[in-house]
Amino acid sequence: MSLVINNNLMAMNAARNLSQAYSSLALSTNRLSSGLRITSAADDAAGLAIRELMRADIATLNQGIRNANDAISMIQTADGALQVIDEKLIRMKELAEQAATGTYSSTQRLIIDSEYQQMASEITRIANATDFNGIYLLNGALSTSATNPADWGDDHEGSDINSTGPLKVHFGTGNSSAEDYYYIAIGDSTAKALGVGNSLDDDQQAGFSISTQAGAQQALDAINAAITSKDNIRASLGAMQNRLENTITNLQIQAENLQAAESRISDVDVATEMTQFVRNQILTQAAVAMLSQANTLPQMALQLMQG
Image (cartoon, rainbow, N blue to C red):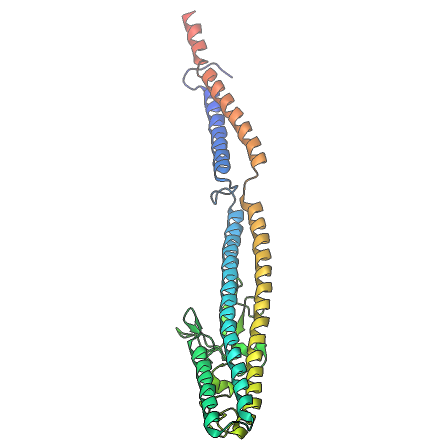
């Protein structure tokens, strides 16, 4: 290499190497300070795209877990109300048993029937008043005519502002009925739907009244049927709660594994990056030193001219 004055090629070379080492040092500092291997699309364009999709799925799964927990809370609300209805039905059967015997007069039996009807009215009140977040649970709004849970969605209509029919619980990242959501149907639990009390359409129907001995005897069978209907609703809710709890466990495992995969793509390996940081730091210091030395080389040409 010739000894020249106008262009200090060694200084230019040292400056270029310094710039590269300093840029690498800045990148290592950014990664170590943020904890991320990918801090911009330039770091890893494909990795960034995969990471963002994973982050979206992780956030969706976590919200799905909250959705399932909310559904469990709703089921527990409905089951608690049905437990109270259960107590009312037991009392009504006790009253029917009392009125069915012949040792009471007609006047006394009317008094017994008065309490019987009050219990029926309370059942209807509970069914009409029980709600979760503004959604009424036991008044038939979530009921379905389908007996197979797989067909509950046929009675669901969600295109309007207020959905109708069985409640749709969504917890997955997509919209596949086999994987991402299912329906909760809760039967009508009013006294009329259960077949007890004077709200029935036919006053000759069993369970209408216990004001007569024959009516009280028929009410015993009607109340048995009402208890069975109520128990079927509670059993369905219990099974659905167990299913949701299993769903939550599965969603938590999915979210955890997906988070681990996202971490392997996105997070920085501190040990490896620290090694690179030290290397780049040494290279930067060496480049600064050599640039300083290279900047003094043209003075050698000045010494020749003065000699």
